[in-house]
Image (cartoon, rainbow, N blue to C red; front, side, top):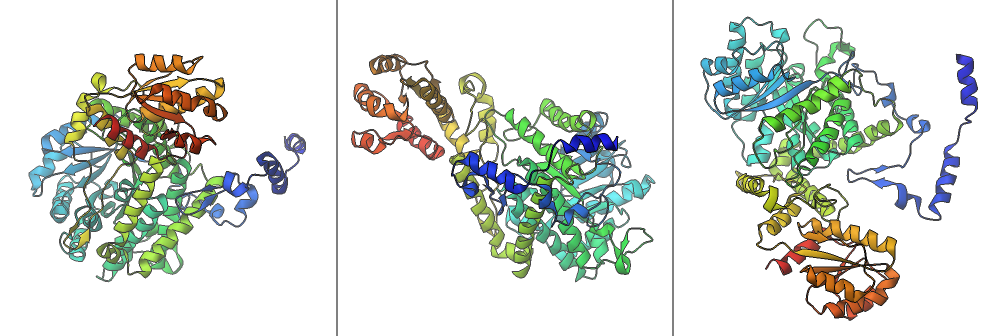
Amino acid sequence: MADSKEKLFSNFPPTSTEEWMKVVEKDLKGADFERKLVWKTQEGFNVQPFYRKEDLESLKTTDAVPGVFPYLRGTKKKDNSWYVQQKIEVDTPQVANGKALGLLDRGIDSFSFIIAETTFDGDYIKTLLNNIPADKVELNFTMEQTSAVEFAKLLVEYFESKKYDVLKLKGSIGFDYFNTMLLKGVEDGPMIQLSKKLIETIQPLPFYRVLNVNAITLTNAGSYITQELGYALAWGNEYLRTLTKADLPVAVIAKKIKFNFGVGSNYFLEIAKFRAARMLWANIVSAYKPECLRDCENKGPDNECRCAAKMNMHAETTKYNKTLFDPYVNLLRSQTEAMSAALGGVDSLTILPFDSVYESSDEFSERIARNQQLLLKEESHFDKVVDPAGGSYYIENLTVSIAKVAWDLFLEIENAGGFYKSLREGTIQKALKASNEKRQKAVATRREVLVGTNQFPNFNEVVSEKMPDIIERYKNKEELEETETSNGVDKIALDRASRQFEELRLETESSTKRPVVFMLTIGDLAMRQARAQFSSNFFACAGYKVIDNLGFETVEQGIEAALKAKADIVVLCSSDNEYATYAVPTYKTLDNRALFVVAGAPACMEELKEEGIEHFVHVRVNVLETLQAFNQILLK
């Protein structure tokens, strides 16, 4: 067998990077390699068009082993299992309990109870958890943080009364002091006292985590991946630094911290993010030299607790890239996001239902969300192999690149006084606002694509046929919170990348008239079809009715057909060379009976403007601003 392999590979002599580059440069025909092929990510680093084995030689990440400090390749050794989590809004404990029990045989092994109540008693806990096998599933609870200590006390009492083996109980309480500052602009109670009391109260449950880093908030505010990670590390470190000063052992604190990350559609970068996160957090915890407080094989030098350095990671699909229109595309987005999180080695995962943007999800959308994860486990076997991305030339380099930028941001926050101080001064809020504005502009110019929203919209999705109920629910649902100052702390505004396009589309859908756009295709066959397709997608993003055509022999024929179709906009689609011939006659024949648009940016554009032609659509225009201007004209 060895001989046959050697013979096989001898038929394929190695090719050097220099040889590859010669072929690339030849194909580029003089174009600049950096400008054409190197991806300049918004995350703060560049990505090469190809990577080779030699690109791994200087990386230490390839020495990592699954389940071994610094956990770059995961905290698990045997498999890649994770908890399939579903959120349950608790209006009454009886109803929430009934829903949870119904989900036990549907693949869910982790519940996240979102509790609106602020006062509790033992009966409340008993009712909520009645007949739920707490030693078989992960239980997570979120409530007002000032109620967290009392809830923890009652939870411990409940488990003790049921005589559970506490080593089999896993879950969390969603206390997060800093997230409250970000979302509400207030400091809700004394952080050190509350955190310390909560840790002490929950100590009988060694595998319950109660200090949360809700980095999902950053993602839903428009952060980049490296921002989310860098700030999350500083967020977690704020708990470590502050509470060690309050005389709590660092190993105890670290084992009570849970990281809740968002996960977006940037598939490979998200995988790399989770790998980098574990490695960086392990090194941060290790710097505190946590002392191992029990007899354990997983110790480092000087009795250092390596278990404390394990990052517990929950992931949730982001709302930032989810859309109101063509909502089933959200299924595609959340599926790739779930794949990134699973391959990245998260401990638990929530896939938000595809319709969560505009309504409270029903059984159908929740079932689809559950099954998305179950397909990854039961049919794709994503839970069987630990860190399948390990050793990939591309992902190993992405991991290091993300780690470097995130670490620099972490150090920047630490040198400025830490996460809490940066929140008080508004540094983080301003950075998130700037990132969101950049991403919104990228969406407006289609540098960041949202299929179904700013590119390839569903032409047949018409409000009069299928959208009225959805739009009404969307309008009644609180979507955004304006940034304001309360108690001296700037709040952040949660946002979605599609928001401005959807506001534009809702303006069209709510109007008494739906503008009609007519493609006047003439001349060169290939170019007129390409221009018509581009323009059809362009105007459909605003919800306009688009009429495409196979082509016209003369300008007059095209104008006659457009007027017969009662077009509000006539788009001339031809080749650049032919615009010098067709554009002005078409414009003059139309004679202001509809808006006239030229599809493209021909060399003669300035001459056409001098003739009175104002409107041009092409790849360099701001799609959002252009369509907003048309709405102002057509819907007034």
